[in-house]
Image (cartoon, rainbow, N blue to C red; front, side, top):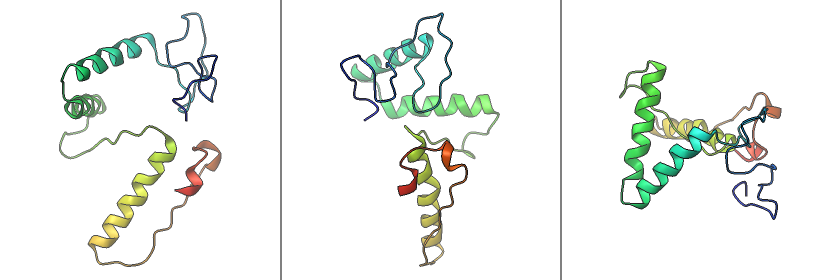
Amino acid sequence: DRTLLNCKGTNKYHCKPCPPAQEVILRAFSTCSPPTASAFQYCKKLLHSCWNGDNFSQKMEDVEARMLSHLGCEEGKHTIVFHVSGTDAEYLPLVYGIAVGRSKGLTGGVTNVVTGAGEVGSKTHVA
């Protein structure tokens, strides 16, 4: 629902999916962070290249490799997982815990403890 726009052209967080005016000072957060002008242009270019037949999965692998390089991490030993929201990010460690437990023959449940509950997505409680 954060991608649906109302009659004012904003999402439910009152954010437009385009770069703001240059003179605007932003106090952004992950749910509603308008893109910078350069990020917006890059994404438009990426979208058009995918529409023209480029492989999106390969493009994301390229982004991951660049991020790993910037972070000083060795490719192949580390993985970056991209999430569209904090709530979705809460599911990854949960699913990982379940997968590791099953691979070890464990049949018990997994307890997910959320710290800083006021700082996470509104649907985190279902994770």
